[in-house]
Image 1: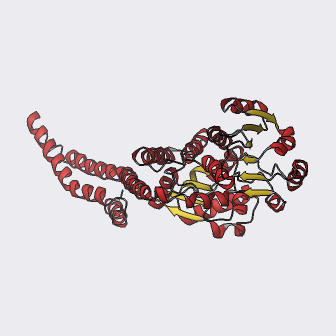
Image 2: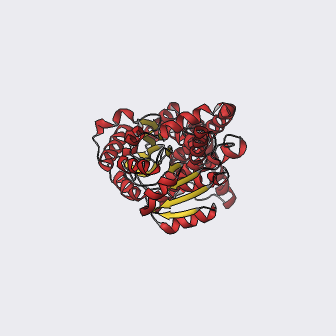
Image 3: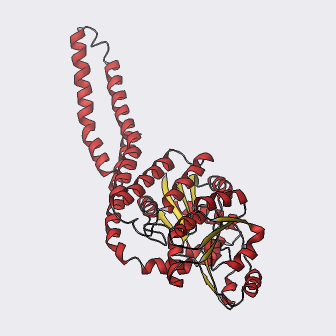
Length: 419
């Protein structure tokens, strides 16, 4: 079985296509079962965030696995394969593990070093466990990935300063306006991203934070935490008319704020401009609203550029995290290879022991007159001979495991000893 990682992210695909291929948490069980029902895939995890949609799976054949993942994504996202296949990247075995470890470390995010992705990796794994699509191999991989993500954040300063997409959204709004002091800010969504934005706003000197959420009680809970105020979704137009900034990131599968909604708000608020920062994927606000007078609309594309501009102070930490990732990939491959050759080595030693016992049984009549101590000596000598004969093949197979030479040696042992 081989590990594959197949998907697309904010660097490989345009935002409008990425949002069409984002899977909500409620979609994950169906996606997982659709994947493992395919002929070439066994264990699987789906990682779908505002930055990526990726499938990690174990498969018998790489090309078959690629086709299975591509076709599953096409069906789940209601797209033709040719609409997105040129944007798919695919990694295999050690490269797949390296990709996941890089993601968990925050190096593959729009905001380098961001902390939210590690929790997203963990939750994707937990959903796969709950749906019984994560077996022993996936569990080892994702457990290791979580360890790598923690090492990157505790042993380097990669996660210092702006450490999340939600923090970056607030910082980008502050930079665009010069300051958030005295501003009225409306936060649409009380999920993880909305919570992150609201918490960041609480320390930014804003005049008022208003939280609007589909489930009002969740909005109240978040608003109370940040000394803000909650409003119902039905009150969004009136609340938006009084706001200076709208920060939005819900998990909705379709747009919540249409261009006509924004136009009505702008007509009601007079000449006051409105800044909208929409970091939802799929987007919460119709992109066409950016053409309205007085409206500035920023999205994930703008946030990526903003985060890249502020990366200089963290560049030196990237190399340190890369070293951690490389070392952990080597350890993962070594451990995986040892597990893969262990059954073959066990079978080789079982074959040797079977031959030894068979020969002793064949000579039983000739050995019948041996004393107990002599029988023990014969047992010890024959065991020693088998052990010495198999020692060199065992060591060389272990040392070469995980590379092409190791595969050739393993194939040779299987053929020579009929294992």
